[in-house]
Length: 223
Ligand SMILES: C[S@@+](CC[C@H](N)C(=O)[O-])C[C@H]1O[C@@H](n2cnc3c(N)ncnc32)[C@H](O)[C@@H]1O
Image (cartoon, rainbow, N blue to C red; front, side, top):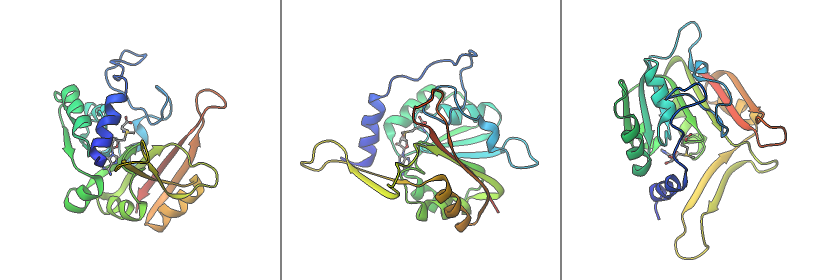
């Protein structure tokens, strides 16, 4: 099974996203695994500017976050390697102006495109599943000066840092492999400074209910 097939199967297991949020809006931003929880899209603003003019989401899935940015006037690209995820995204958000979807692996796309962005972000997305030694220099090269990188995903498990690999399914035949990278907020800060980012904020956002798993949230600025 290929990685794209794995993510296509994952998409089939996800319940359909809610049509509207508590405020009755069709699009909204959600950095965490909990509904309507965490910061909003304003953290993608460059200092002294308003919303980014151009933004890229790496691993956009069914696309609601990037559709929300486009609805706020941002020229937006939602990238995902899964055709299943992107066909859902196109079916749902194909009518949104300034929004484009690209089906490609994130580091392959960043290695090929000449485009530059004011914000690059990833929500439980491709930046969790790619080696930061590969992805961060590419993201840095494709951000405009002062541009913002932001990402979120589950926090590292205590003592389990760096590359994590797991077979998905049975240990027989050719099971799909899932790789992801896990670091503490302090480690992320060091890594991002090392790759030429500044003003790094890396935190674990507490869950809405005490005792539940929080969310790693990282924001950094390209020098
Ligand atoms: C857990 S889902 C999250 C989707 C979406 N960001 C959300 O919050 O609902 C992870 C997504 O990242 C995509 N993905 C994983 N690795 C990727 C990579 N290297 N390049 C592009 N997309 C990737 C998967 O296809 C999947 O749609």
